Length: 356
Image (cartoon, rainbow, N blue to C red; front, side, top):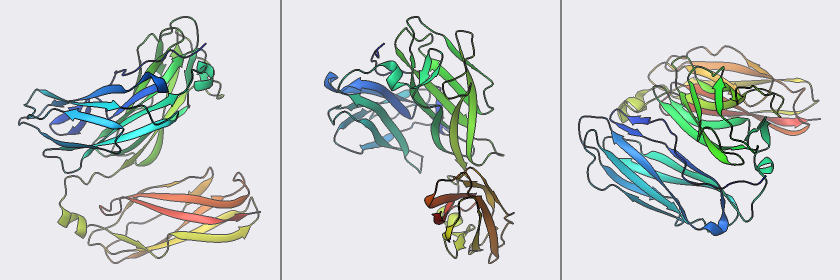
């Protein structure tokens, strides 16, 4: 069965981007489109939920392949404004990921919007385009990226999914992780066609760094063992501190870690040995420095306790890396610290060496 191509599918929950503004989405996924089908278009809609007018000052794009128009007059309370975008679809048969930067009144940091999709020269079977299947419900990946979000906020993303059968299917989700919302539209998904799966992660005060949120698809009332060996799909997001409401002066006086080195080199060791990497930093800021969470992009690791560091205090901690399940050869593991430093909310450290 071959893909039924479609464009501009919208099934988003409103996403809050400031105290008085919401947007229907920050990502539009065109899905799989034919290169010869010409330009494709979509619209982002802003809603003013505040008590004073809002203005879209400017919208910039990353390349000349994207044309954009937006509401020029002030958006009054209760009203809506639009950002209309057209992608030329003439860059070749490749995946595309285009950015738009939106400058708005009363918001210090611009809002980033994304256009995504895959241009193809010829149609391909749905089973080839969407290799992860739960019965007739198919996806490109079983672990999907939602990206970075800040405390007090939420982040939404969307991916294309497919119905590989010759009958419509209805998809729902159970055992959904707290702080995750997920849905499919259109639902039911027509036979031999595609749909959009949108998901939103809401930040929670006790959750920091990289985390995976889970949901189990229910297809036509039935739960399937997926082709990935699991019966659930994942969404990962990275949660960090929100410093949008503090001044530049407060940022400069906040905690500021200075590391003696960002890379621990262990040389050459036998695969299966444990690496004990050591990192030392001093808090050069004027407030206490805290590490909310430590993430390492390795399957088996642990780390020593990292105490809060008072201004001027030096702290040393260790990361223990079990190498038994890591590939032989040159190795690089990234240690990511989620912190309370306005100037360094995310700190990346590295463990490097060679496994024989």
